[in-house]
Length: 352
Image (cartoon, rainbow, N blue to C red; front, side):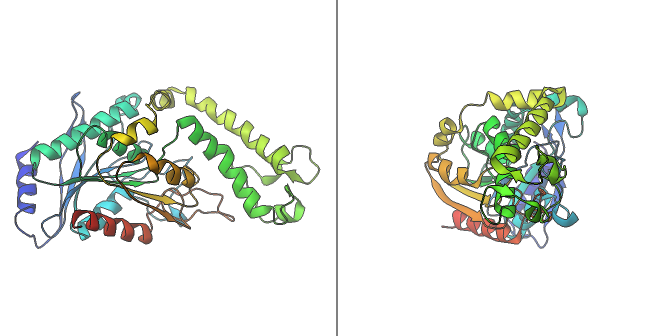
């Protein structure tokens, strides 16, 4: 806690300001690591402070989760999700605090960029806000891995509300199977098998050029080289084989610690019932990372679920998918439909 941050928040909560502002406020974790942080204040006295928790990957203050596995911004747009959220929240009278993940600025900490450490860091950020502005209402806004962190954090600590974007509620291996096998096979079946015969013939193959995820030519899945791709007999086995190769990457030291920490997490169904705050869920109907049906099913574990909102044309980061048939994942930016719905829900929750 610093005197500058204390004075800034106290002023924000007592006197309406003529301008919005951002101030650098590092987060010092309980194990002595310093992470860059930023407090964003709205023009008027804020209705609450949102703790922003980003998605998986080596993510900094801007919240850009772009990577080879989740893609880049839609049509090359900037996908700085945390910055985007901070700006729209400030425009709607809500302050926010965001910080860089451990390891983003100090590579020696990358082996500790695991769920258990990230959860403790989020607890430290919440503790900082509580100590600095004990009278403030604090909400959690989490995206993807950050939505899961927010759930586990809210099961331990009191907050005023959870706003969860693209929540992964299933075990990591089930999530990976969906990402690398179920989603690409279903996408190709839905977009290319026009006559619903379970085969992708030469005419249908002309509608696309590459396979999702692996980026190989579509013809690579024609395992018997007869010019026709059987969805069950060739396409699914091809993606299962590619997935097994990708799983080999999880043994790499840069991913092994992260993966093992996810494997041993307590079940979501055991954690969500402990959340006493109101919960709002948001999910892209075309999400290639987390099955949208899971949000509908697993939302039942929250005692105070307020809504589950699906966005028909949105992928995991609430932008459309790229590519000829939507075979290329995107990492944002967040759509205006999502942002307007989110801010409306936040305002309604704070002023029922």
